[in-house]
Image (tube, rainbow, N blue to C red; front, top):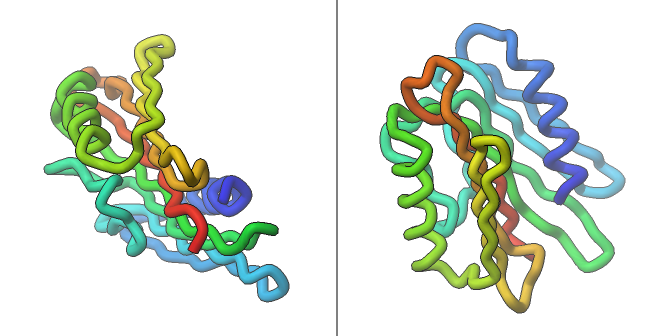
Length: 155
């Protein structure tokens, strides 16, 4: 999954300068790996978002990625979405702490790194099933910039 997200992130950078919604799908016929990248105004959340990784209310999506990787242990699906919200870092963090509390992702960690708050949760029996939330104050100080990275585990 990491390889799919990294390749997809490169695609987000490639499409990032485009006006309007841009969609691109990258796939590898030999491995079955596939990523769909969407950027720009009107970008939508990934189609494979699980219940444990909901969008925050009022989110203004900047980019999204949905992907499938092929590993020795089987296929793994996941994705990433970046967005802006008008609420503070702490308000967003409180929302995602509640989401994690209601999920089966009981292996948890939290880190504040120079003002960027990172919340993580993973399943105790499937370390490939998890969520990472990064929340930082926007440069204009009028809200938060959020990145959700999730993995659905073995599919």
